[in-house]
Image (cartoon, rainbow, N blue to C red; front, side, top):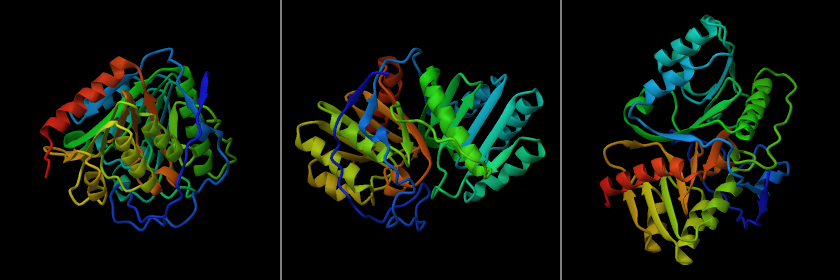
Length: 341
């Protein structure tokens, strides 16, 4: 795969951050859980995909889309999900197992909502494991289907995601992306079972993987912007990312930031730099979206230190114009309807 290398200047910071639901003591003063050098932090894989991805937006039609993807599995189905409360999706996974699909599910052990579906999965004979305690939160949200396509998302399998949250996802059929996600799942599956785990080789990948390369790759994406930068996230508490956004504004990039809460600690900083900031209206903003000069980040990573350096998270870069346009069009709609104060 063609590679482009760029030195990313990182600032070491310590900040008190929140996890997806907010308010937890996430231990952000601790070192990242994976302290090994990772070549992925210096590599950006931008080779065109062999098959263009398909992007989608939630909540409209989300449960039907996810159901169809699960129903489409014929041989294998691997799911890693932080929060799962929708029983109907669990029933479809059990049905897949009953028609001969080899199914494996990893759930976050500390997400209490998972108790709603764990018995359904396990009583249905679906091999289900709690994620390894290596990560602060196992916050990933993805599926690998039949070994030839992956679904990478910001949405959980919970009721709010199906009904009232803004989220983004994509279906990716590129063999290299599929292989990379499968390798991460296989490693985490083994670790969750106390088995020897083969490290996933993500030294050069389109994936944004926490805790391995996410912070550096997110900062690199922001720093790559020369014309426009759109941000649509729950919150923006990670100092290095926040400062990179400010630096983009300072070098003349047109920056817009859409947040969930008016109380977000980033608001005074951003507005102090004359960066337009708005707040989501008409839906709960659960997205984790960055768009730099039309290159889109989609995934599970929140913009917090815990999420970027201590959780298990999976995201990906999308640079195909048609796929990116689905997401950027939704951002424009959300921006137009957002509240300025």
